[in-house]
Length: 55
Image (cartoon, rainbow, N blue to C red; front, side, top):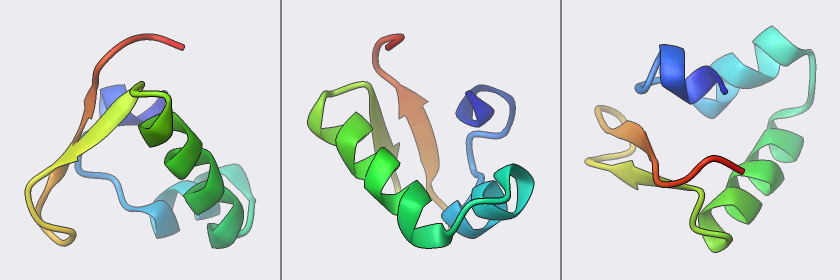
C-alpha cells in the first residue's frame, strides 16, 4: 500500500500515481475505512494514514 511508504499521501496524489479518478480512490479508501483496514489521524491537510490491519 502507498500508505506504508508515504503515510501523509493525499487522495489526489494516489490517483495521479495509479492513473485512476480521484472519486475511485475515495471509494476504495472509504471501503478500507469501513472494513477497519486503515484510519486517518489528524487533520485532512496535515494528517497521516494508519494501517490497522493488512487486507
